[in-house]
Image 1 (cartoon, rainbow, N blue to C red):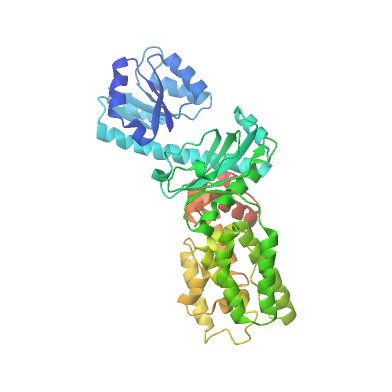
Image 2 (tube, one colour):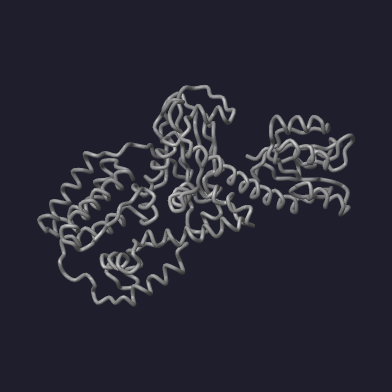
Amino acid sequence: MYRVLLVDDEPLTFIGMKNVFNWKEAGFEIIAQTTNPYEALDIITSQKPDVVFTDVRMPEISGLEMIKKVREIGLDTEFVIVSGFAEFTYAQEALRYGAFDYCLKPVNMDKENLLLKRLSSHLKSKKMYKDVIIFEELMEKRKTISQCLEHAGVQSFHKYYQAVVVTFETLEDYKELELEGEKMFLYLGPRKYFSLLNVENALEPKNLLPCHFRCTAGISQIADSNACLYDLYRQADMAVCNEFIYKRKGAYSYKPKNIPVVNRLVAKITEEVDNKRLKELEEVFNTLPDTFRQNELGIEDAVYLWNRLAAYAADLAEDKDNGFDIGFVDDYDIMERFDTLDAYFATLYELICSLISTEDTKGGCSNESFLKLIEYVDAHYTERLLLKTLAADFHINLNYCCELYRKIKGCTFSEHVTSLRMKKAAELLKEGKLTIAEIASAVGYDDYFYFNRVFSKYYDVSPAKYMRGHKGNR
């Protein structure tokens, strides 16, 4: 909820404003009201409300002077001027001081509730931008939980902490969610947030989300204040990926990867490949989705399985001197490339099959078809693109498509898409017209953390630093 302070020298005004505005429905709560502008300044500096609704003409300190004083002490609290004076000069001066809007008494219900919607959207965008910067600093510096809370001036009551990452489709899916013991709350994108909880005992997934919530939550392991905040975040973020594994929303706890189980799966697969048994290989892959779910394996296990097989395939390709490369992945690559666990295994199966099959995989495909595929990718790179789907649409064998990418483009499909997205992101960051979260979304990333990581790796600098570095050039 966004916190509101009401300031007016006429007490009756408060009654009207409370009745006219749909505060709670729009996501606002009134934390205080006062007829004294000096008291208002004390409340603003001590409680830091998100927005102040104030009259323009008041004794001793006007609404405009209040805005000026708040700006001088470095607070970016939003102001809405509510006045009975319709003079243009008042409105112009209020906006020049940085007021969000200027509305007239008596307040019109329909008009001013639209104001609340605009204000809510603005406050969310502002918080998201700030949160992205804060999150980036916390992750880069690898601070402990105690260091982060001390820096934020937050007190804790219990010894232990857990991180929670929540993803949702719409605001309606999560806005009523209240997490007990929340000490830190950061937006990581339009449909994702991160929370640090101060807990006495480990959270149980079944107790985190009410049954009617359509969100997915990931919960880290429990840790004390000396733990690195980044580590807890990554655990919670990987736990969220269990929706991909189990095909349902809900709350999931993080579990470390199960190396012994995955190693046994790798041994089965490589044995069938070594003995050129395609039928048996297909049977192994058909059972893998159920095996994952029965053994409660997670996204880290999917990454480990793929990369073990990628290393195995690279060794075989080197022996055969055919240049075939499955490529290594991380958890974000898998989530970006595949809609479901079943689709992930289907693609991996096709790629592994090429290690057995000796027949020509070109299937009559010409380079012209591949070039048309490239043209399509160049025009639609901000969308969710799956190579298996594209290869089928352009009538190219998946394995051969991978080979063509290496021979013609000199990179993998994922590297091609990433390059297009990063170059466009760099252009938008230089322009500075959008927030970083908006830019991430514009180039195809709903997850800011993933966008931040990819951009930092591609340009060797974070998006925020890249944007700040080009401010002087605009």
